[in-house]
Length: 321
Image (tube, rainbow, N blue to C red; front, side, top):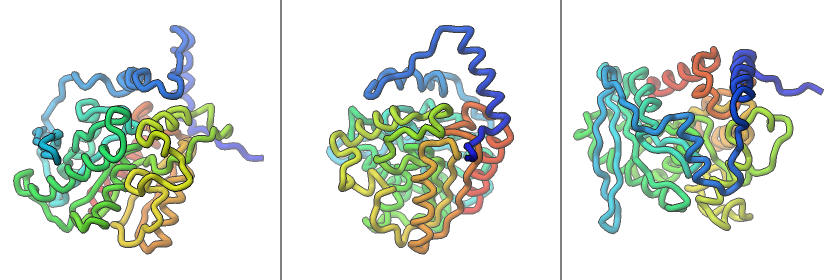
């Protein structure tokens, strides 16, 4: 029986990482439900967000997005100094619905804006469990609508080239935004770019074939979905298609999609299934499946060839809007 293999360059990264781990204190992985432990671990990957950012290639401005009830959230605009397109994207960041800040994601989002020459606007949606569903989805939708209505203030753009993009949990939110915009007759979206999106709350059973390579584990996924949906996580009937796009019954009339995922990612099967269902619903899809790499591998091992290929494909998808 053939087994899934690890990309050789990523395997070399893992070997070096393991050697470092053995030379230091043993790493204790957070248990199911340990939100704060995961937030601390996330800082080791992306930093605290307090690090200085060089605005040579991208300028950053913050904007206030009003919400119902007199509240507001922040939206951060990333404008490339060398703008090469009239397209405009709304970016929802990842973090399993429980992790991540705009500050932590600033280098990542700015990198895509600079490389593509396309401005990106990131709503600072509130996180679970402090703010469970529907808050992350509704905050993100408020940001989407605000950007659409204030496009000229944000530097202008072609509304026929207005799109959503997100990674991991942000890919969930981006897919949900496409559904919400369709159902609410909101902004007309040209494309949804979903980077290894977290789409289905039923992905909670460990797959032994990939368990040794996981970066986002099944325990992490259980924690994220339970924080977002509470007792509704994994229920027979999904809480809402906007929270769990992978279980949406109707995918017709959605914008074309770009989806990518690695073969060692727990989201692999749900992402491929979502791409297939979009195609069956008449939605054009580009699907990139990268062999031998897990979730967010390109952040961990950015100099590997597959990481460079993945980033280039995402930039190409943005430029193609």
